[in-house]
Every structure is written in C-alpha cells, then in structure tokens.
Length: 120
Image (cartoon, rainbow, N blue to C red; front, side, top):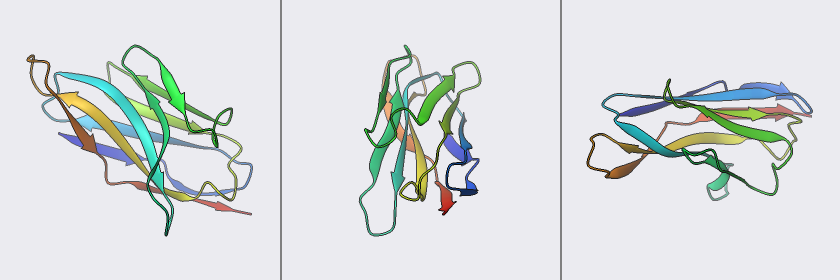
C-alpha cells in the first residue's frame, strides 16, 4: 500500500493550492483519511481529517480556509487550501487507515509529504 501526495508548491499569500493523496496497492477499504503538516523546528500537527462517513475535523488555525474531501471510489483524498498565510508553509503529509482484507483490521499509512511554501 502506498500513499502519494501531490499538489504542493509555491504560492503567494492569499492564494490557493489543492493537495491530493492517492492510495494504491492492495486496498479493501479506507476508513479515516487526514492531513498533517510539519514546519521546520516544530512538531507534526493535525490539519484536517475526514471519516469514511463524511465527518470532518479541522485545526482551529485552518478552519474556514481549508477543506478536506475524499473520493471513496478513487481512493483519493484532497485538501483544498485557500487564503494561504505566511504561517501555513510546511511539509504536508497524508495519512489513512487502510484495511487490506475483509477482516476489519485497519493499519495506518503515511505518504512521503509534499512541500507547501507561501511567499509574502
């Protein structure tokens, strides 16, 4: 199983980016998917998460600006980031709880991360 993020890059403050996270491999089911970020010298922090049922959770710092979504058929998650601020730059990581079989056992997987840079 692999999670591959894409969509990071350089954007001006106030701009937007859309991150994607594609899960591939032997996947039976994906439960929760989420996005974390880690800036230099800081701990990795939760940005947003979404359950399979559609419930979402956001860090206070991104509420109203970021939107998490997922395409269950495509096994892909997204993070739409609007109104980017100078404090948003970080490596953004995708994570997902994935079952590889029908036994109901889910394991956590992480992507390799994608860099987001915001210029002021």
